Image (cartoon, rainbow, N blue to C red):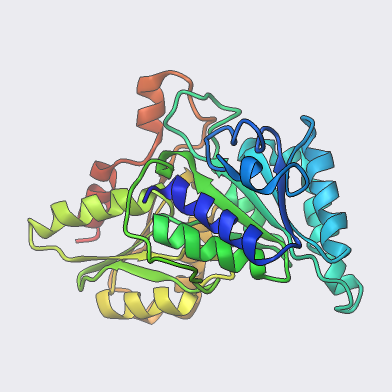
Length: 320
């Protein structure tokens, strides 16, 4: 099953299971979504459960906050993560604070789905990885899967969660295939996964970078270096114990992300390990990230912008 089909299956199962679940956004209905993820759901569940909206991200998230506060479980889609800035007030001043400010009397069970990532010639306003903006907001859970099985299990958990969740889908993963368990299942939010066991270095990677880290690990293995690849899967809350446990085993840490380095998720992971696991380290922490520039439109420059397998291999070797 592809990553895209796994998300579609999770949405379908939750629409069938709970009549309070509904999905809405730009072109999610008749058209089936900009990336085809919601294909067929409008035809099966009708225009009251799968709703096309005007081009207004502010309205989409505003409706989601109100519907969630009223007891429904909305699953809004923001077509590109780059557009999230338009609806930030609804996210960080309303959705994520209401349960806290109302003393727990209000629940906001909403799951925002959105696509991110470079590699498709979509230029600087449709290709960004800005997950760090959102991991900084108390009250918001941030999920970033890398495989079809993780995408399905984590999305089901997100929809059933009583808190706002941001579900991030890398555009380059939609066509990736993988084994997905049959039937309904969940993967708990906040639990990392060891994608590859190793003893010499820990590579923490997210989304598309998990696959590049695994390729790098294969190249390193040919030279006798066994890398352990840790996929956090949920960035907030972060399974820091899984990362620290891996670093305790390997003594070395490389963090790989597609976003730029400064004030990033990779920076947070490095800070946590420095604070809580400094004695575990046998070498300085390395971060492999994009350069601090907007995503280029030029195909050669865009490919140079995205962290490569070679850059991950080089970072590991520099640790000695």
